[in-house]
Length: 328
Length: 189
Image (cartoon, rainbow over the protein chains, first blue to last red):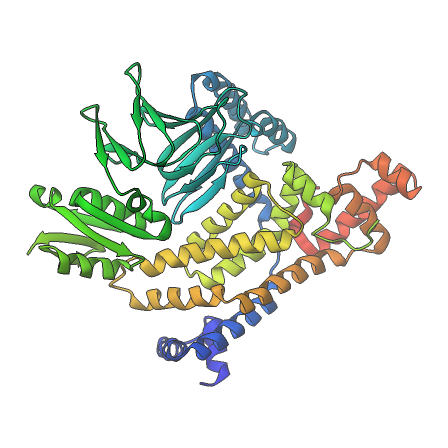
């Protein structure tokens, strides 16, 4: 293919039929793709020289407002003690908002009050690893949020989790580590375990891999887990159930795998929706209770659906970008 | 002191890592349009590209974790964000518009290509530097000390052995000059 057609495509000037031809050509071989990569990079590099800094002033003002909003959210989700402070900040913010121009001095002042307290890490479409100030390592699954102080207190290490994460906690007998997961507190000294506590899910699951953890709910006697045990807390019934599991299956998400072992279709769908950002529609209640067993090892969504329909009595169709599941 | 205005100046990096609002604002204004252009070259949807760049700056602001190379760091964050986005786009079902999915997949490979990517990273750094290099030598010194190293006018006058009045003049001149070449970039100062 002549270079000029490729460049025309890169510049966004091709006609529809030219574009189709270029796309076909790129997909023909790896060397074609590489050539395209190179031409595109060169084009971008050249074009960058002509890019002017237009309107960045007004964008910055919008952006600095965003920073404030984000921070206040962390505060409100942390606790009553901090609530008072955030109310003060809110007033402060309102005042700033009344001035059309955001004063950078106030931004600094605002920031200094807040920045030493908490970090908030959110993983959207990808898993993310966080190293805490004490050296503990936490892997966040898709669509999850971890809130932790920049500096732990002297007697306790406390974090808040919304979503799913795998914790590998540095041992420190004098400073217990506590995970706040919805209405549960998970208390450990030094160990590795997995917590799944998505807001949309009906239950909170804690699986111990090594060491020892205690689950604390209000004033109930703490429940102690031993390795390869999973505690499932049902949020609606407020009941805790202990199951024996293969702990490596539970944390297989860290390698991009989804492993289901007699898992209700309802829960399978939730995992798939999070991982692939798709929507399912299932009209039959009994189908939702169907227990599925199978492994999806780094598959594309299309492959997942094909495998699902081969290995179970379920068939799928796609309508308006939604996936509809039915009994065969 | 270093005569070249270098975006990877360690004092500037320190200021950003400490959360200095002025330094961060400078970084934002220098890079936003260019990063947006890069993201938009791989991501056809304008609003999504805007959002990605906003997230890039949020990340730089909240993590405060730049080591020695601002340009490399901010470019890598942008590149990874684009990769994440395109990976998701590739996986998302899209029966109606197959071409978009093919383009997402091609663009994913293009930006994942390390060699191609390093070309863009280098050109980006050059484009950023060139914008600032137009400054006359003396002005540049003063400007770097004031705005990038965060020194006070008095400290600069002491170090360069010139009066504070001259320092102020240089800064005004620098700003005028930069306005000419960088237009709105410096309206803040």
